[in-house]
Each structure stands twice: as C-alpha cells, then as structure tokens.
Image 1 (cartoon, rainbow, N blue to C red):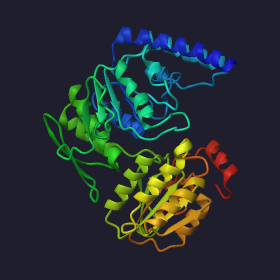
Image 2 (cartoon, helix red, strand yellow; image 1 turned 180 degrees about the horizontal axis):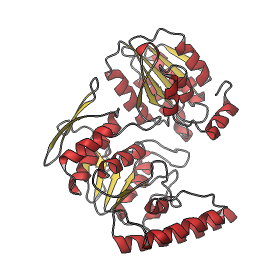
Image 3 (tube, rainbow, N blue to C red; image 1 turned 135 degrees about the vertical axis):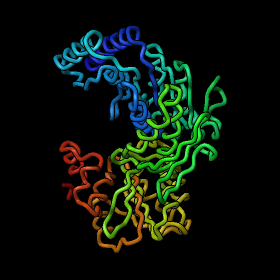
Image 4 (cartoon, rainbow, N blue to C red; image 1 turned 30 degrees about the horizontal axis):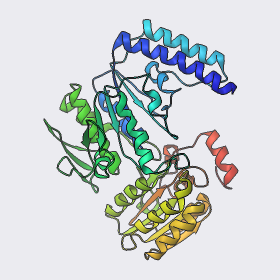
Length: 419
C-alpha cells in the first residue's frame, strides 16, 4: 500500500515536468512498443537520429510509467523509498526546464507485462511517431491469448499521430481494427535484402537506395534498420549521415550478438530473453549461416503461463534435423516439452540442468566450422554463463549480459560454478 502511494506521487510529479518540457520545447517524441525487439529498435532509431540531432533516450529498459519521464531529463531512477533521491531528480528536472539545452527528439520505449499498461500512457503523452515491432506471446500468465497481447501493444495507436507496425503484425491479421498505419520490414523483400555471410545490407526507401555493412544480426535487428531510415529521412537527416550512423551501431549484450568462439566457431549470443517468435527468428538466422555444423542451445521461455507446454512444443517442432547437428535444452519446460518435440521430428537432443554444464560440454568439443546459437532468458537458464566458457577471447565476457556483481550473485544462488 505504501509503495503504491509513493509511486503515485512520483508519477504525478514526474509527468507534470514532462508536460512542462513538451509545452516549452516541443520535441519530436518517438515511442517504441512490441512483444520483441523493442529495446534494440529504440536503440537503433536513437543512434541513427543522433547523427545530426540532439536526442534524449536511455540505453536500457526504462519503459514504464515511473521511468519514462526520466528519459526526457536524462535522470536515473532512485528507489521508490528514497525521498532524497527523488528530490534530487525533481531538482534536475527543474534545471532541465530552464538552464539546459533541450533535446530536439525524445525516443522512449513503452513496455508492458499486464493489460492496461500501454494504454496508461494515453493521458500523459502524445507521440509524433509510434513503432510497434511485433506481436508475440509474452507474460502469458497475465494475458488470456495472443489477441489480448495484440490489443495491449497496439493501444499505443490511441495517442500517436503516425503509427508504424512491423509487417508481421499485418500478415498475422492483428491490424484489421487500426484506423491508419504504415508497415515496415518483414516479408517486404523489395525494401530490404541482407547477406548473412558478409553482413551487407541493401534498403530501399521512397526516395533513396542504401547499401552498407551492419554489425547487427537477425530479422528483427534488420527490420530496425528499415524503420530507422524511414524516420531519419522524415526528420531531415541526409543519406550520408544515416549510413555512417547505421554502420557504427553495435549489438547490445545478449541480443543477437556475434562473438568469436573457440576453434574459430561463431557464437550467436541471444541470451537476454526468449519467446516463441524470437526463438524461431534466431533459428532462421542460424540456419542461414555458412558453417557446416550448427548447434542450438535453447533455454526455457519463461512467463508463458498455462500455454507454456504448447509453446515449447511448437518451438521444438520448428527445429530442423537437417540443418541442426544438435540441440541442447535447459530449464524445466524446455527440457520436457521442447526436447520431446524436437526429438520426435528427428533432432539429436541433449537436456542439461546448468549453463556451466552446457559450457563445459561445448568446450570439450572440436568446434571448428560450427555456428552455435545460445537463446535463453533469466531464471533457471542464464545461458550467457555457457557462452563465457567457449569464448575465443576470455576478455569478451565483458560483452555479455548480466555481468554485474548483483547478477553474478543472483545466478550463484541457482547454479554452482558461476564466477
């Protein structure tokens, strides 16, 4: 009760400051939502626009009603029980209104884990541009079905002047009730082509053709390049500056990050989180790689609620025994349902109970001419710890997700051997 009361006070004051900021400076506000890929898409958009604009954004997960206002002012979130910390935040917000150079563009991420959270921004912010990346199963302990998820994510349209949605959303029939929108990425091959071997990208916009190399990997990452170009052009950024910005963008830890493994193997580090569509997209990327031997390490998809068995089974059935040398699973539902389904379609499957066990197993193999996908999430999985044991350069562990002392301590409570 006390926490909710304090939170309500903080929210009301913070958004009052946002209202003042928007009224005084009139920045362009871009919001990114979606079941998967929203943090990476937000990041690519922001870094592209930074090529010639002052952009306020946060390179992390400030995406709820408490933390989004902090992005406008470049502030960090104190504990809700830290009144002095919040007083300092409000002091700096005041300074931001009167003494600091304002942002021309603000890029925010809007997240949800239960119904109504996206709509809750409706009375607080107007978005000049909204981007919804994809609709996929997420937090299914709180949503009744995939249509409920779509309704939640697409409620962003109520407070957006211009809405862009990933082409998959339209293809899957979720956009039928939207009054007006544009699509990007997905099945539109005329707009985007990518060479997985060389990371060469070609993108066609309404006005230009772009050709450049990217350090990003995976379908949702590539789609983020398309929408970033679209927005950058609308906001007056030159083709040359857009290309320079896009070529400089590096992957985020745990989000389709390509790393060098032992024996010159390729490690695809997608360990941050996991959901059905994200796993399938990552598998498609693995299948397209040139290496002759491919291993998929697939962790539990957490928070899938009552349909977890169904979803893990679907992912197992998606695994291709012709393209995969081996599958390794970790986590209760992955070990039971995903592993069983993958075995039935003809895949060679190993079930394991620890990321350290997985890492040690892989480290003992000859991994020459191998590509290995690590697709996981947090509790009972933490596959970044398996990646750590097969890196070609041990110093690359600094590039992995969840390596703070806090996270290492949390992981040590679940698994032995975490360092």
